[in-house]
Image (cartoon, rainbow, N blue to C red; front, side):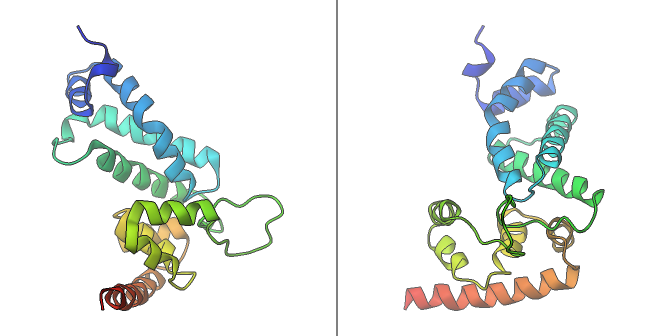
Length: 188
């Protein structure tokens, strides 16, 4: 019999749905590192990120049968993980607003800007859209990231970003208008 490392994600999910915990260990080994990095880009507290990641894989273990097998497992895991992060943040003090990069000692800027590496990764990950996102007004990319790219509702994005629901809606409207103009200009 093949070891769990030789199985596809779909096969591991099937095994997990049948109670095979080796499948969960292998899924964790494959997906926890990148999930943790993406969550850390949204939350500067490593304890909250670790808790959200644990909550995510606990949910996968409990709900393995709910995965339908359509689409990438990574996308399904990300939706679970980011929602678990939002849930964890709801229980924390509201003043922990999420910057676009983790705060480091010596930062005095109240609204940090993405690092050069993050800007490059954004361009690689999202192509022309990534470049257009970089040119948005500074307060808008986080809202687009949370709602459009991560698939959160406006209310979940408001919780995640620590801003009012109406502000998310307003910023998203402004971002869409700017992106529409930016991307249409690139086609002309």
